[in-house]
Amino acid sequence: MVKNMNLKKLIAVILFAPSLVFAAGDHIKLDKAPIDLKDEASLQRGARHFVNYCLNCHSASYMRFNRLRDIGLTDQQITDNLVFTGVKVGDLMKVAMDPKESKVWFGAAPPELSLIARSRASEAGSGADWLYSYLRSFYRDAERPTGWNNTVFPNVGMPHVLWELQGEQVMVERKVQGPGFEKTEHALKLDKPGKMSPVEYDQMVADLVNYMVFMAEPARSSRTTIGIFVLLALSLLFILAYALKKEYWKDVH
Image (cartoon, rainbow, N blue to C red; front, top):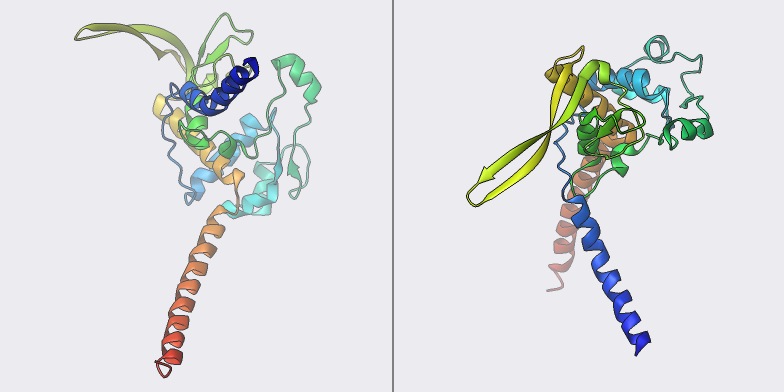
């Protein structure tokens, strides 16, 4: 009897665990990231932002500097503007930070970012949507070791490295009333403006996320183009095969 009850509990957990996981992520509201992989100017600005602000702590060890040729940069432009550590243009985007030391400083080693734009995809939105929302959702929190928290990634160990550009946001409460109900909502408010206006900062983050989407799959555009030609070729082959079949069988019938 006890074994049967335990078996039933196990089956219930297996059946309902996925729905519980999805339900836990439903409360996260993500903003739509304005991704355009055909906009080379945006991708180039995003590459510069990534090298300047992300590559100090985070590696992109599956990405080589020379893949930036795909977004319209020459080897000389890459060397002059994006390679600051003396590495060669064909080297991987790695950092010198020791993972053990970074774990002591931040509580966890900074994640590798090559595929972050794909791995963060969920029921709430794409990985690009998550990154776009995350980088715009930091706020001051005196209870956190770094002094920062995030609405998309609560209690995150990463400090807000872009705070000088965005400024300082704070969490505020507001009461919402309606017919027969009253609730308290939390929202972010820009308390101290940064070097950029909110519109400029959003564009800067959009460029950065656009590049990170490209970095997650540099061959995406060419793969899509090749796929279209393959489908057209298969369609033409189907038409020829169908015509040949009709010609072959017309005498039989």
